[in-house]
Length: 484
Ligand code: CS2
Image (cartoon, rainbow, N blue to C red; front, side):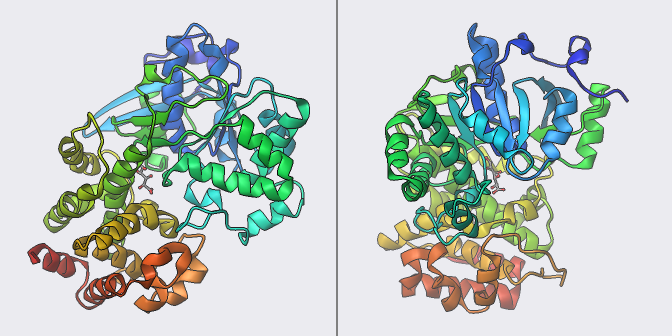
């Protein structure tokens, strides 16, 4: 089968770029060009380029820190790839053209630094996953003990962390007298822009206080909420998409129809007309972040740990269990939704009701093991923050405590059928030895913070963990459904 590439665009029978790709310039540098970026921000950018006569300024230069796989798959295709939107039995294909180059920092660090310091670059966006911020998950502050940060602060070249690249790239911009840039985090962190600003300024301060001040004055860090379920692309997806296209696409992306992007409109050097692709601009994104991190991601994490332990490999299989569906619905309705701030103009009940159908989309195959990764970085904003708020108000939180207990249970490394799985988490080595003792693990401050000192919290999690261990997931869930 012939390979997808710029020469085939005219003949494609699916939606394809409706603009002159050769005019595109790299206004955006995106760190962490994984499937999520390619199915979310890049698609909204594609719409913006098409809608704006001046849109060619917003081509995307993607950067992978270490892995060459996206570069190796996309560059022989001239940056083109297919987005397959799957909803139950229906599928819709679109070839996206917004990515003009992919750099691999490990192979060519100089090219990445030069791109950050390029006059065309106006936005540096990030999907580097939660752990990429090298922060203390409980507080959001930079963790100077992180091995990558310690390496990058020691001036050893080249950098190994995203923060190291950002600081060095911005240092070059400053030295060259280049204009400001916007640093746009698109990761699922609480106040993601503020968190990025905090860790980057703390890092830059240690490099050179004048650099810190330059960044604080010249760069903006809008908070944003991003949402689209994008499972890891499988070999089967590659075959199915290539067959549908009639051309071999080495690395398409697969996603659900739903897409949401809520961004604070604070851009230092302009931005694409992302509204054309459905992005929503607001003064404050944090209320939307909370809505999403708690209802969508909090539910997903709970489903993931129950699913891995009980042997349900995908979220649609989890939600197909009657007890599970009722549990997630109850947890959202009674324990998560009541913690949300006011969201003027949003029907939160309708939003919540739309989530179960998204989780049970059978065409996605969203793997519970994928979501279960990096729990130490996810649990704080997804489950612990709402628990802390309920605890402060004297409200019950047994369902969320069961969710946290399921994560701790998962850390033992084998499921209820005895099958072992790897714990993929940057804090795995620290957490695993603590996981057998609820007091020890909840005392682990980088994840639990002050919540770990609450006897009410520790007892509640301990009770649910005891039930999971003694009775298994299904019985423990049935028990909590009967609780008042
Ligand atoms: C998931 C998210 O893997 C995970 O942690 O919870 O990737 C989730 O699917 C997205 O945030 C949905 O927008």
